[in-house]
Image (cartoon, rainbow, N blue to C red; front, side, top):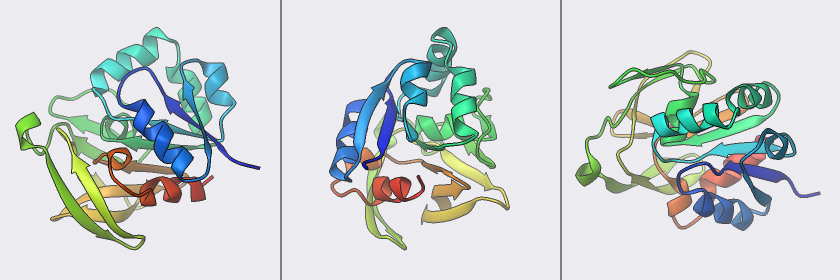
Length: 185
């Protein structure tokens, strides 16, 4: 039976994630309610603007349901989603869900004009990494595992069932990152 992956559809490029999940062989659904979330096998928190996403999670009463979901099922955060899953956030400081033992600096690579595309080597193969106002992972805890780096900075990290990228794999050709997430479910 095919896995059902929810993509939080409050803000960000959730449509591109939906397509990447379907290209990887799973069913993708847009998630806007706790009931929709809990009907899924895994969940993706897309890129976007992390402070806006936090506000929308609170407004839609999804913060605690998301924490409950993450206690038993896999969550994958990209860019702003990685910020939401981090343990500690700076530049400026903000609250987070604290699901991965990583510290991130928001917009660590600079402003929109500093966005870039790079090919990064991973154990899964070469991945095209699209960085758009991307955070930098400044610290990785002992339970987390770095899957890829850009320069000296970790850009793809997993811990337990959860995973983050500071880049946007949903905008790249190929589905290496999304297939890795599906393998965790």
